[in-house]
Amino acid sequence: MFAASRIGTNMLRQTRKHQPRAFRLPAISQRLYTTTPPSSGSNKPNQFTMGQKNSNNSGKGNKSGLIFGLHPLAIFASLTLLGSGYMMIVKPFLHWNDDQKDKREEKDKAKQDNTAKYSDEQIASFPFDKKTVVFVLGGPGSGKGTNSARLVEDFGFVHLSAGDLLREEQKRPVSQYGELIAHYIREGLIVPHEITIGLLRNAMMDHPECNRFLIDGFPRNLVQAKAFEDTVCKAKKVLYFECPEGILLERLLDRGKTSGRSDDNIESIKKRFNTYVNDSKPVIDAFDKQGKVITVSCQGTMDSVYKNTHDQMSKLFKELGQEPKPFKA
Image 1: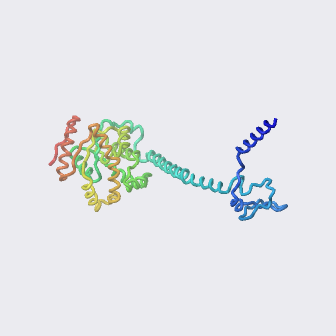
Image 2: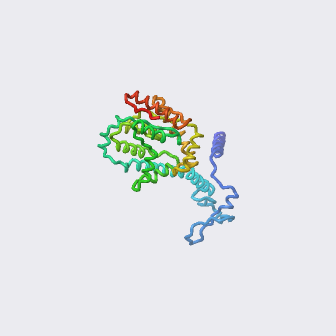
Image 3: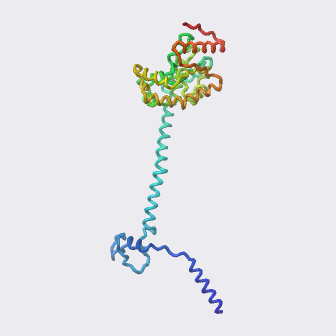
């Protein structure tokens, strides 16, 4: 019987040994954070004081140094983590959400075709697919506009410059896109394709008698290229004026002395070069895989460059079964 009693006592000791102890503040914390019990008859809540010991030695119902059962340092740490979480997660998300909202508003604004001169029925009945469209691409200052003007005279093209159309729309007093276009041009960025394609489509419909169109400075990226070919018509060829960047920079700075264009300055030129390399060059590569690119080197005299351009276009029209006009020396 005594043996059983000793065994029971040992088991009880082992059980107490492994029981978790109640959490107690270190002695220094108990001195720093103590509560002063309210005076008799007072309705004031407990106040936390520094360096006072608890006058209530009974310990009944009093957890010294705790706020709502939590240590003050734990509360401080929790608030710090919450603040860090807001700065690291919530605040960046709010900024991102605002940016996405602005982009959606810009797209919605672009889709509201304020520049449309024609009804949906007129657009649907226009024979875009019977037109010969040639995209004219190259770096800024490569001679796209100069050579296009001569092609108009020799081959009966209508020359549509995407940049000129955008600048005209920007200056139009009642245009809802004026400020938006000005910002994109100034920053060397690509204007939303809904605006540019709408302007080009309207310009083509302004010349129903013409079957040949040179579209200069378009498409600027693959999204524009696909959108134009899906909604307007497919291009027959891409006329690409190839020119080293050093020559382009020299030409643009010289042109900027008299052009009056807001983007003919060194900062805008560098941004346009970056846009061309990152966005426009892939368009040329994509069309080249389809066998649609005609490459003309811009190194040489203006006449020699145009002679090469003319010969290439004459060859194109023979392939299409159309009679090209004779070259004027």
